[in-house]
Image (tube, rainbow, N blue to C red):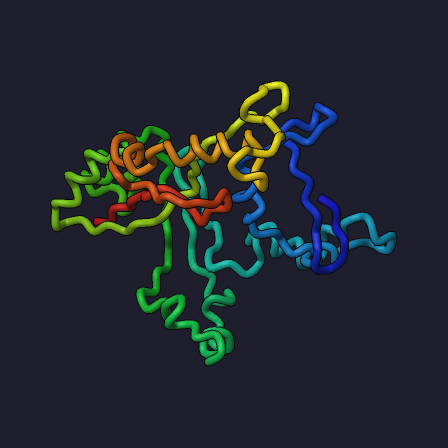
Length: 245
C-alpha cells in the first residue's frame, strides 16, 4: 500500500509477490475491511530523532494491557491453548456517558444500553468442532458456532432450551473464466454478430452464466441457505448460526 495523504491509501493487489506481475487475489475485499490501528496512537511516543519508539511513554503502557487502548475489555488472564478471560473496563469509551447519551449518535437504539452489565467473559479454546458441541450440550459452554453442522443445528432448533442468533459469514463462491486470447473462444475479442457492443467471448461467457442454475445449486449443495448476488463485491455471505443456551 502507498499512503497518498491523511485520508487516502492506495492498495496494490498481488497474490504472489515473488512474481513480477500482480496476480488476482480473491480474498482481498474482506482484508481491506480490517480496521486499521490509528497510527498516531504510538507515533506520539517517539524519541527526539522522530524515529525510535519511546516505549516508556504512557501510550505504550496502555497498549501493552489493552490492545486497542479504549476497548470494552481488558485481558485478565490466559492459558495458552486453553482459555482467555476478559473483564470489562469501566472507563472504556463504550461506557462513557458523554458519548452514549449524545442524541446525534442515537447510541442506545443502535447499540443497546449495556443493561446486562456483563463483567467478565471467558473464552474457552476447543480446537475440535465436535467436542465444542458436546461441551455446549453438557452446559459447559454458553455459545457455540454451529452453522457447519446443519443436521445438529436443525435438531437443536427444535429444542426450546436453546435460542439461535443468525449471522452472515464471509464466504464467497463464484465462477472464474480464463479469457486469455490463446483460448480462442472464451477470450475472443471479435465483435459478436448479433450485438457488436459485445465481443464473441463475452457473449459466450454471459450465455454460460445464464445457463447455470444457481438456485438449483444452492438448493442441492447448500440447502438453500446461500444468498445469490449479481456482483463480485459482496456484503458477507452464507448463513451461519450461533446457539445460545
